[in-house]
Amino acid sequence: MNKEEKELYNIPFAYRKMENLHIVFWLFKDIAWCMFWKPLGIAMIIPTLTISIIIAWRTRKIFSELCHNLAISVWISANSFWMCSEFFGVDTHVVFGTVTVKELAMIPFITGVLILAYFYLIYKPRHKEEPATL
Image (cartoon, rainbow, N blue to C red):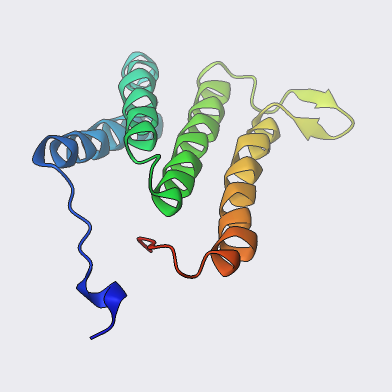
């Protein structure tokens, strides 16, 4: 058994409870989006995004966790922007050229991909000895 197989990544119970609650908020946000329940969908943005940012902050000392949790936070931001653009009926409005309001959500989506690309393609190969939770 190598060193990596022996190491444990322990999540404090309070953190795990918060992460699980985060999933509940996220599901309610997306159910509200699917059902076009505007008030609930918009209200769920706040706890869903807030908890994802708190989780990212709490995991900042483990770079692999930080990168993945930041990617989740920008994903939720993109997802929430897209949802709101549909709720307010502006998703198909053209911003410039052929780019619509909904397509502006690609900015945070791509930001998340870039964070993970940096981690997997640049950081991880240069820090092979550093423990990572992948």
